[in-house]
Length: 204
Image 1 (cartoon, rainbow, N blue to C red):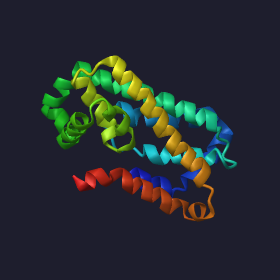
Image 2 (cartoon, rainbow, N blue to C red):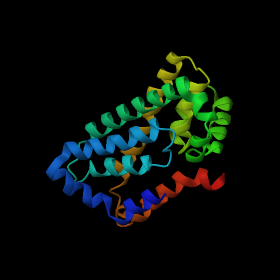
Image 3 (tube, rainbow, N blue to C red):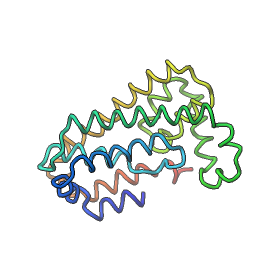
């Protein structure tokens, strides 16, 4: 939430186009890294993935220097690889992480419990559906790894979920971000997305 608010306050959608003029590769790499970290590292489930993707899609429709194809493909790759890494963490180190008292101080146990409930409720589809739920999307591949989910099934739902999630957020930014109402209240719109991202934490 804090990161999302900072992005809005600093007029992220205005700063990034300026940075793109000097080092586009670095900007792309930084944004892709954020998505990879959000999906791949269980200890950082609160990064503003939705906001980043939406803004990038929006800037692809403006004079922001972004290429929609690069944005979509890059984010999809980052999300797929991130989930794969998280799955492997869960598969090989999950039990150690869960039982570690030191790590429990960093990662809230309730996130794991909620993710496990989500996983057992929806089964394999949890990998796909989890993409659209902040916090859950970071923890669910870890849970699948701990549960020793069949890798082929995980890989299939991982790719499908990543494609749908990225396309939904990026194309929403591309097509709707330039609507006068959204454009004139862009900062508030980002704050709304950030709020939705932390809603699961507030409810729990």
